[in-house]
Image (cartoon, rainbow, N blue to C red; front, side):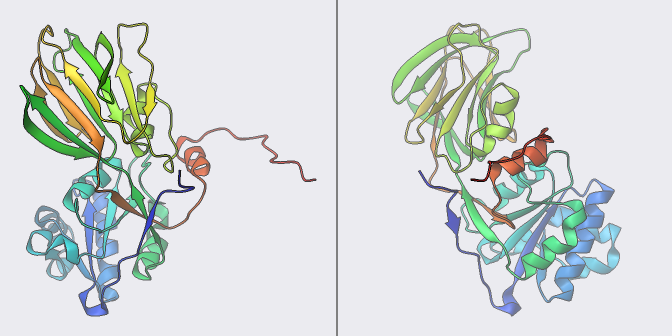
Length: 316
């Protein structure tokens, strides 16, 4: 087991070819202000700013003088990007991860939301964060993702992926799902429930945590299975090896349909008899890290945990 998440090289491009994608929630004034500040700084330093066309139009309406300096993401190859600067919460970071899926481009998150567990910096540190991004003064950390597919009658009908989690949930409030959990090709348990979450270590602080699952340090290679409101004696959260194939089957006696969500963003309906298979993906998400601090400290900071009174190890 590695002592820390795997590190990847920091991308380097010639000065004239440096491009950074800026992703933000342009429906909020705070986000537009932050995007304007970041893009102004990039232009000053000779780096070409890139935005989604829709966000580019919003920024041009907010700051007309900047509009001509930004090129559209739709007009460039994602592999030519040096970095993605994400301004927002975890949802915005997950959206940005979709845009550069399959490339080696890292994401640097600046939290403009609430907890922002995936973000590396806060709004008040924006200037220093961009200075370090321009100086390539960061490390690139690889985070495990999962591949997800839906199989019906032996045929794959849907494929996706997730950084945080894949969830199977009931579509109707008044009905339960009847699920069978399978691990490593063997059935483990069947029960009626609201659904089940399969999460990565990164996602252990997201939906799985809210559902009562454990927090898993990101240096641990594992996957989590967390039942949601299961009517069963054996329905505890499970931590399994990443080499295990996990499957959740919607039993045919289920009255109604379920829904598969990947990172809460991509959805697919699940009829009775559908099978959701989850396995470790060969394609990680790369996060730019400004400091290699202890994950414990990140938990304390993000969740505002009480540590008053701690004195540390006694010196010999």
